[in-house]
Image 1: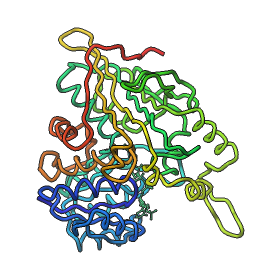
Image 2: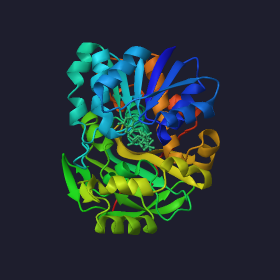
Image 3: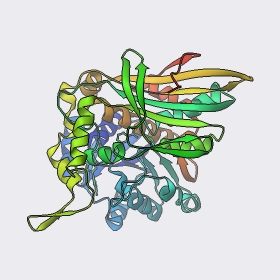
Image 4: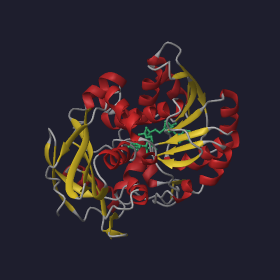
Length: 399
Ligand code: NDP
């Protein structure tokens, strides 16, 4: 059906490549390119069958990207490198008139801040070029945004309250490790909390608001209110939302390590001089922490991510909870990666499939909740992330 270029050979890229390789009727040709070509070759060899071509690319170098895209001529570029590379990859897509998909919004390197404004600014140029950008097509953002769109389409006339709940109840046996790129992960979880309330953003100290939430098949887990990028697009696209919050579970051991890392300056993003050369502390930290892609082997337990929604249907108040539970062990058996890479990579593959099938294909820049959620929701059940729904249950929304 079409040719796809995947950029980024990390944990998520591994899952995307595995899943796409198994669907030759949709992804007729696949190229995996990354900064380190050896990592692409390793993934391609594991998948076998000559399904994956590989290439080296610096995704911050637009001319290099343009050359790669001109040579391979993909229908779609799937960006699963780092958020820093979103804009150069979008620039190269514009120059070559190629559509684009990612799983995380742009973040400048020198400021731990993510916002959609930089990518939304491409709207007119993508529209004029007749190409599509699909933003935030992992699990969160991604499936959580699509769950919300699905709820709005089928179960509510008006969504008023939204709690996105993200639990990782897995155990990888390490004292401290992050489930995706450590630099991006630590930048995300150490920033100030923020949620939407009555038309404006309310800020909190990092991890200031927390409470136990009950997760299906898992039980109560302490959950912390943090800011997460899909809140920004969801309150824009569903303006009836009065309150939107994001909760993530953290273990005490993880939080203690995080506090020490911050207190001793190892989470710093400003360069420091070390033995005559500049190093960025958090980048050095990444080099000594476990590689998230290698956590899978001994990872046990589940992730549980979902949306808890309160609103109106036919004039009556109702509640709705839609979620997926994913087993780290099952994810590892299938793709050799842990659950967080899996829950991100599968939706990226399905988003790419939506584009290839012409279902999510329109000129401009869109967050995933702006497309029809139904065909995507159907594919989740087929490709390893089945969802469950509970109507009129206690959503534990009060603090
Ligand atoms: P990894 O660190 O495992 O992989 C990132 C890959 O990108 C690495 O292979 C790296 O290459 C490559 N890369 C980095 N810089 C460049 C560059 N300049 N040019 C080319 N390639 C580059 O990260 P993950 O796989 O864990 O995460 C990938 C993305 O997924 C991130 O953007 C993350 O934010 C996002 N994500 C989204 C989630 C969601 O639910 N929406 C959840 C989890 C992650 P090298 O190996 O050479 O360093």
